[in-house]
Image (cartoon, rainbow, N blue to C red; front, side):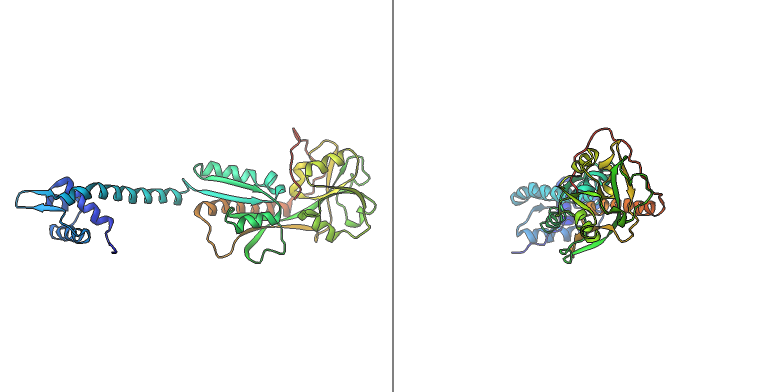
Length: 323
C-alpha cells in the first residue's frame, strides 16, 4: 500500500499533540482551522486509524495516536536533518572531491590549488591520486576520481576534455655544458648531446620521441622513472635532458641551468578530463573552477614571460615521477 504523507501533515499532527487544541495548532501552522482539520483527517485516513479523540473541551491521543507520536517526531527529524545535510553539501561545508593528476603536475603545479581549496572549503575531504595517464583515466571510469589532469592519448573519446596548459620544453644541463650559455636552443643544436631519457611510458618521452630525429642525439642508455633521478644524473655530468616547463621545479640544483627550446611545435598539451555525461558534484565544481583559474593565469604568464635559464636553488631534493 502506498502512503502519501507530507512533512506538512506530520508537522500538523505534532502541533496538535503539543497544543491539544485545534485552533491553537492551526495558528502555529499558519492555516485556517477548517484547513487544519482537513489535514488531520487526511493523515488519519492515510494511517487507517483515528489518532485523536475530540470533544467540545479536550483533544487527546488515541492509543494508536500515542504509538504514532515517536514515529512522527523521528520522521520530521530525519527529513529536516537530510535537508540540512544537503544544504551543507550545496554550500561546500561537506563533501568529497577526488582529483587524479600526472605526477609531474601533482608534485608541483597542483598543490597550491589544493591548498587554496582546503582554505576555502575546509569541510570538504580532498583526495589526490598521482598516476600516469592510463591510470588517471581508469580512476575516472571507476568513479574514484571526479577530475583528471593528464596528457592526450588514444583513450579519451569516452571523456569530456578541455585544454589545461601547453607545456613547452626546456633543455636542462650543467653550467659547464657547451649549450649552457645559450638564450634559446633549436632542436638541431641538440645533435651530439648525450641524452638522459624518461621511461617510454611517460607522456614526456612520447612527445620527445616524435620530435627528435633518430640518431640526432646520443642515447646514454639511461632511462629512468623519476625526475629527481634525472636531475641527479645531469648534475653528475652523465648527460642532459629535455623536460617540460612544469617539471623544472625538480631541477633546482646549483649546477644546473634550463634553456627553452625554440620549437613551437614541441609542447606537451595538458588536459582537464571529466566523465562524459556525468555532472560534477558541487564540491568538484569548486575545485574545477580553481584549476581553470590557475591554468588561465599560467597561460597568460607563459605568453609574456622572458626565458629563464637559471634554476633557483631548492632547499632539499624532492622525489617525483616524470610523467
